[in-house]
Image 1: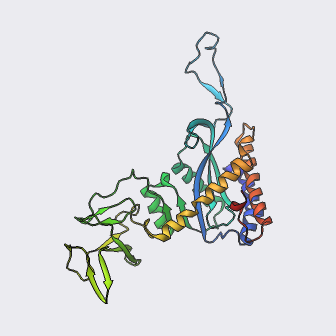
Image 2: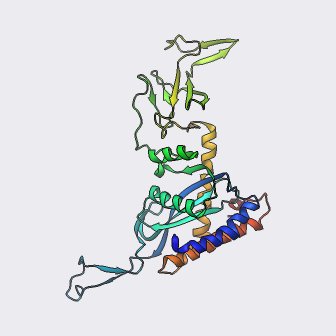
Image 3: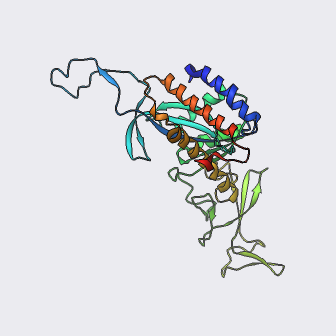
Length: 319
């Protein structure tokens, strides 16, 4: 990203900050979505032999090659279900922007996993856009790693990350409770417990028995074999420090979390405009600098389009 420093300075000064001044992006309270998309640069690897094995009839030799585009390689496109040669474009998009505006890009090799692409992008953005204050991060299940939650907690960022189901969860919590895929306790009778608020100072979420009802001014348990003689039934507190990956605020089962996470569609709209509307893959370059030039021109056009629209218009409604 360092060779493209001047490009980003132009984009940031003339476009990103202008959008912030117009109220299209809030740089001091950013909500960002991270997502990677495949960018095809050629049908096959661009390489040249350094040996004479081909003349000797050896087609699959292991001799060294000269690669004209050494920062590209072969990766897997899960959408098209095929391999491709090129880049992985990891883009940070403003989720609270009505126009799905891009904030910071990073071109990496196609084989790079999104969780690694995020790290390259994130710390590059911190270097080039140090004045930005990120408050929320919306990421898919590819980023569901414990160190990321720990980092967000240290930086005062609220993470909204989908579970991938591979990281495991405590099979039994507090002796007789299990935890479902949304981080909600299941009582020993098999019922999903009901959320009853958040104790911010103590860093924990409170869940109560779902069979307790308030009727006729009385608190009663409708289950035939109550598991507790407490007035409000059995109560469980989930401490976020026990497993910040699974127990977060707001919980994944809450309406607040689901409403916020729905904004991830902004990344899809932004990526669609770059690949389909502006045809980023139509470039025929063998230089990463040229690909960055094309990418930044497209990002500038996206901001220009947002300025031309009425304040009540959404780009996502036009495409």
